[in-house]
Amino acid sequence: MKAILCFGDSNTWGYRPDGTGRFGWEVRWPGVLQRELSGYARVIEEGLNARTSVFDDPVEGVSVCRNGSRHLPVLLETHRPLDLVVIFLGVNDLKRRFDAAPFDIAQGASQLVGMVQRSLAGPEGRSPQILLICPPPVKVLSALAGLFEGAIAKSSGLASEYAWQAGRAGCHFLDAGAIVSLSPEDGIHLDVEAHSVLGAKVAELARNILGA
Image (cartoon, rainbow, N blue to C red; front, side, top):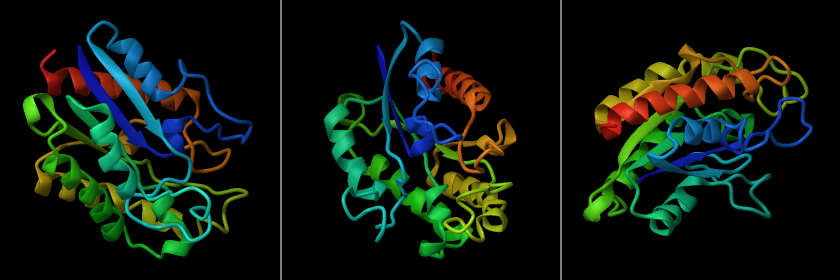
């Protein structure tokens, strides 16, 4: 049985675009991934609302750390051996308070890739395979427009930067914006259909990566 760690933010946690809570396990993309790979892989879901790649959040991180670079090493140790680590972060790095350019955000994601590559968290003490996912572009913002000021313009430049970083690091890459869109309801979260499509695509890639 293979082990797959899904490391992400509220779009991995399953936050509903209408703000009414959390999608059920069977709806969330890691749950779809688990269903698609039933009997072949065990999916470990590690989503945290407001998680960034490498940034300490001075507002939302006061009571709970939101910096993914502080969480990932612990999770790699907790869940090893891991065959595949899926990293799906970047939306929260677009918040106005971080003032991060697309290159900075992609470089932050690349730092996480490096952590996995330097780890001994894979089978037989090797490093796990890695799939880096770039989030879809932000196209519209409603109630969170102030928090994500400037995100619409910046997010359109993420895919090319993520692809470059993935190529440089030698890891697998998926541009989620090529297959799904963020919900127009709030502009930053996946809806039910997007979770389904993304989960199925990650399952397809995981089979290829792991030689299913």
